Image 1: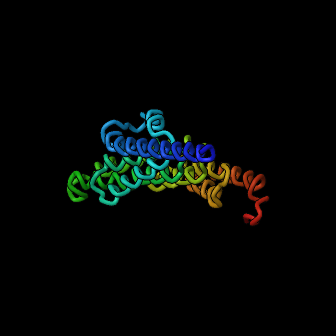
Image 2: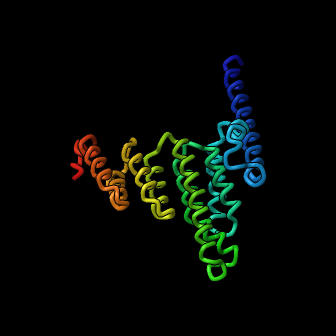
Image 3: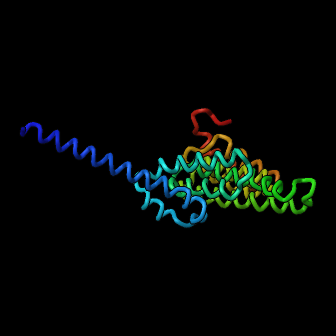
Length: 229
């Protein structure tokens, strides 16, 4: 009988943990729609969410992201898509994937959804279209900045922000600044330094482009294993 007692205790503990986990997961699943749709604001609630969901937050973040992605595929619910994607970022703030794709979705896609909601390109005046697209690009940039801060200056996020600044905002100086930060970050993309210099050069800041790239080449690129021509 004594030999069986440890096993009985272990089995009881296992069942108790399983019941607790199931209860916590049901609470988390019930919380998602309310948090995602009505209560979550872009910069509020991360501490509450982490406290409520505890160790399940990364799992719930994945489910939340999937729900947001399904709405993104339908391309007809801007508010719901953005809220769910932001919720995933809040639940797992170290995830570069969530920040990057949320920022890109807002910057690249949602302005076009808004124009379509207002009647389409044939009905919305050109200047209004440009205003809407620029506004969403700025919102996407703000999200990418949040992600850069949350991930400790992730080089890939910096390069993504540089791309959005260049293509959506037509701001070569701002793009060059992000590319320079990416080039100087850990695990820098191979193209970041060259694009930083190239965008400064295109903007007419040729001496600055040359001086920075030369210094970066001497300090970093020349020592790289691939030779970095």
